[in-house]
Image (tube, rainbow, N blue to C red):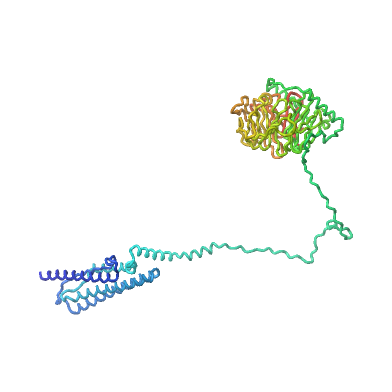
Length: 622
């Protein structure tokens, strides 16, 4: 009982003494750092177990060995702490400021002093009571190992004046710096720069062959050396100035006399030729609306029309761009306009056929449109790209100027009235001109702007003459002439079924109930225009090769005035031919010329009344 009481008193006294020792240690730390947060971190409690023993049971040598063992353990503990602190200090030295280094050294000395005090107290209590011995328990050793781990953290010992966030931040910076240093990025970047450097190809200079000094040059004739046989230089040849001649000179304004370029104008044949044309104009017959014949009878008439050598002749020097047939029933008279601006007249009844051809030059650029006047067939009106519209009067043997505008290029025209006094002219820039022949001068009455960017053909309805149809670049518009004004006009009807460039658009010649169009998409389209309202429906689409190329005149499908439900168009097929189609799309007939027809028939014209005889076809250049 006395032994247990003594043991309890010794435990209580040791606990009191340890608390006092802890207070002293915390007091020393408080003297070093004024921040109370650090005292809780550095306060270490040493756990000591007191075991009662009797001196009689132990020898004096054993006590000495135990004392020496304790001293050795305490010394090794101090040495281990010092070495760990030195390593931590060395690793953080490059990121510490001088002030932080001073603070860390001061804290280090304080910690060392406190640790020595702890060991001194423990030694003091070890030898204070002769009846007790001190044995370190495993808890004490583990607490010391924990203290050594805490001392290994640089943010606890060396940065006691910094907040936990700042110590953690410095620790992260140190770890990141060590990590990036281990990656060796600078060395890798240097290697990549060397790899990226472009290797400059070695300059390979071609060695020029050395000229031989004694090498003889190539022989040259005395003519090229411009010397005579005796070696005397010839005099320089005089410089001859060559005047550039315009291929298409502008025709002076005003009326032009009918002077044939291929015949003598004083020839009696030419005077008889003009008289024949004037007489044919007086005996012309008018077209009257009649019932259409059946397709079967129409085919019979077509079979009676042939192409022979007598009906093929070279009328102009260049390729033909327009054509018209005189309405006379007594003779077959043909007019053809060329791309060179020439107008050729041919009387097929005259023999030999070369004497029946007369060639004139009323224009300087291609003649795009030709019409005989419906009121006076002795008048032949011609339109050209050069911005002029002329009327050839055979009775007076003169080409009168009807309309002139050299700033614009004309493409097509038609008569708005039956007496041919008013005309509508289409321009290549998409505008139109209203021309009145009764007004003196050569200017237009009105310049009309349309929504089209280009106009290729203009055609007037044969019955309701207030309506006119224009073929543009991709669209076909129908206008009312009574509503045309100077500003931008909107069409009454627009046909937008075409996908490529349009070559022409024409009403049927007698009733105007149909419209035929020719397009570069290899299709001929026929529309129903019997009722001109908000829309003209599409009736038939005919597949036909319309690609003529760059140098040939484009195909233009036209109606046969004798059978207005049939159209005539040229063909690219071999051998050359001219085809006839019905409005339903059915093939009707083909005119084969054999060896007589060697050119592509781009422009075709049919006589308005004659249903038998020879077919008059204007062909391209020879």
